[in-house]
Length: 163
Picture: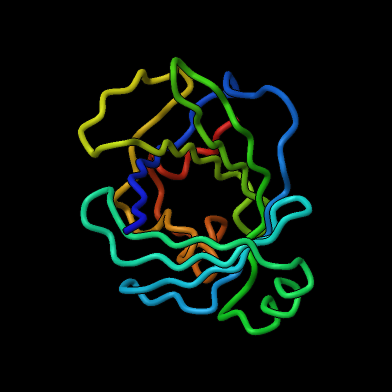
């Protein structure tokens, strides 16, 4: 079975910035924590992704490339607004980080994700990496579409706008 082992962190400085990113638009056909179904347009490619519930940093993930025209039609069926972000691939050590700079109502939020081979895999923390938010549901993309970062009322380190 295909699985995703992913850890997610806030980004604290702009030291990660390099190269051009890819614009991503994604919406959710189902945002149930037991099974999320997402449609994504990334550059000129489109994907349908089904994810199971998380157990720690691990969950089942099934991703299929679909025609761009199908993605456009599926966006009309989404439950809630579409998330927009620019994704940058940032090499660090032997791994590549995906850094997402959010747009729209999530502007000001920058998250870094790393996909690992195992939950306990060691990795080098780049100097621009902040606090881990892997288990904080506020930072799940499925939640950010209906509870955007710009609407959060709490104050604290998680609201610090990365540069």
